[in-house]
Length: 178
Image (cartoon, rainbow, N blue to C red; front, side, top):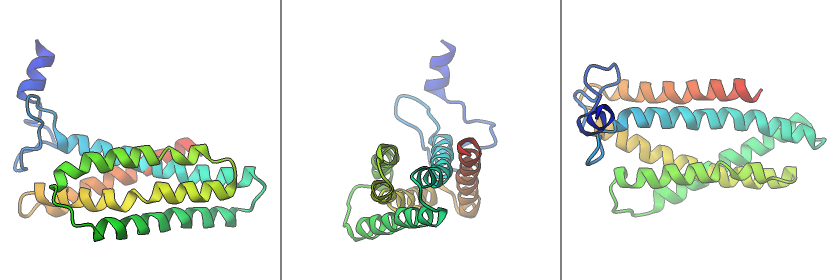
């Protein structure tokens, strides 16, 4: 009974990250606060970023290459993100950003696993580029959703929470992977 009451009526009232003043970011039938879910997602993505950076350096060194080669691998990751952003930005999508976000989040989670399949440094670079291809589209869409949800005068705060979540996750991911 208590769990159903939480799901059906919500738990957002009175918390520091509540939805007061925000558009109702809840799922029909349940009251899952999508603001908190978004912050958790950003934290986990940040943890993935932090661990990927450390793992790329370790992988390159294990394969007898210098750390400078790891810089090239990480640059390929960034170029993949840039390419993904250019492609995503050129599309004329009609689906609302809130409907695109779950798809892009899932795509990012799936391609984030690709570098673990690398068998060589070259393969790692190519797989990191594939991973990167989902980063910019996710962040572009997430920024739209976040900007639309924040009431006037609170957009900066909303982006600050989001940035803090990703950087906190990156710090944890780097520490755990290191």
